[in-house]
Image (cartoon, rainbow, N blue to C red):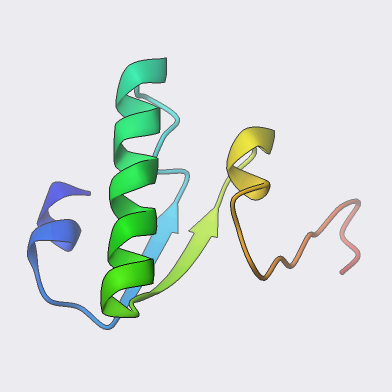
Length: 68
């Protein structure tokens, strides 16, 4: 994740990026991603099972039971 955040990408594709992190690190990286999204207009595609991070999104696509 650090490499992706260090580069000047237009889109970040993140698949469960917070799973192996402790709560403090999860919150730090979440704020960092939000900041880059708001300030630089980076598009973020985030796949997660952590409910608290779904709430931070402005656009959501939720897939449950293999239905969109």
